[in-house]
Image (cartoon, rainbow, N blue to C red):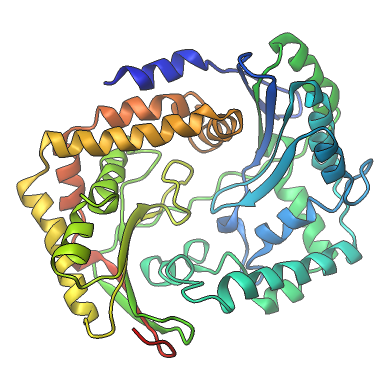
Amino acid sequence: MTTAGAELTLRHPVERFTLDNGLRVVLAPDRSVPVVAVSVFYDVGMRNEPEGRTGFAHLFEHMMFQGSANVPKMEHARLVQAAGGTFNGSTHQDYTNYFEALPSEALERALFLEADRMAAPAITEENLRNQIDVVKEEIRVNVLNRPYGAFPWLQLPQIAFESFANTHDGYGSFVDLESSTVEDATDFFSRYYAPGNAVLCIGGDFVVGETEELVQRWFGPVEARDVLPVPVTGEPMPTTARAAVVEDPLATAPAVAIGWRVPDPIKDFDSYLGTVLLAELLSEGDASRLERRLVHDDRIAIAQSSYVGLFGDPFDVRDATLLTTQVHHPTAVSPDKVLAAVHEEVARIATDGVGPDELRRVQARTEAQLLQQADSVLGRTLAFAAAELIHGRAELAGETAARLAAVTPAQVQAAAAALSPDTAAVLELRATGGRS
């Protein structure tokens, strides 16, 4: 175990308490800089969407910025920016979050703003129609009118998984979005935006006792509501290979993506960590296995990457999820040739293992990335909130670097052995309108 990960845990201890309405609160004080970060994570994401309402979690994230009982539309942004702060929100597979980073004297302002929209967002017909149009335009810009816009994050799950929760388009279809009603939005808020379904995490420059009083003052009056059980999104491990082909008239070169199911990120965390490091070993940096083999030696790829989790962060997702390798290659190179080379490199690790020096290099880079994220008050606060919501332990965010440093070559070798061509999902993208 390296000392850096252990020092991170000691340097940023967390405290927690729960309000009577069920809101879980995590405090991570750090008096070194006059900045605070406030984040609210709701335990609802794309995988919670019912059939016929694809994209609704993301749509509702937009609705939460349209004003609330005591904050007119656009006032949230004005109040944060007037204090010298920044704000945003995002929708993921398993949660939706909202956050601000501000000078420490503006802490109460941020708490008031988040509590007000937790209690009563402005769910109106006008706001809903406006935001449906905004989301549709976002889909046009990011997916429909962009080369590789849906590849592979929206397309690969459709062949890698079985359940609606794991296979549907989390950005949403236009039909589903346009048919959404105020009643749908009100019901979604009632079901998933209860205080007991959320984690409030505050990091940075504050006094713990005073902040507890502020949290109680602003969030305590928010009405408690029933909380739905966390949905079961895990699926049995696949026993067969699956494949599909998509065409992209905007793409300039073909591509292929391979998705392998990986261990449960919650129940089998140690095995999961071996898979995370395997992905790094395969593709991160010029010395990585696939970069050397595909791009430099065989010259059968233009670019390659491997990662765990559809959103690129392996530590904020529940089961089921994938290790994905995606490769963009020249038209003259067949997808089968690319696939064979990828599987050969994975099999080599499974058979021969990985040397301690190579593993230490990957561990050092991964640990450095986590520690760099933790240097920021906002980054650290978001990591603590995600760990509390997903794993039930905010402290895990401070322990992960050390846990990764303790992964053995045998764990990485076992992770590679589990990536069989016989159970992989393969998505081939044909660039029908471009030239290599």
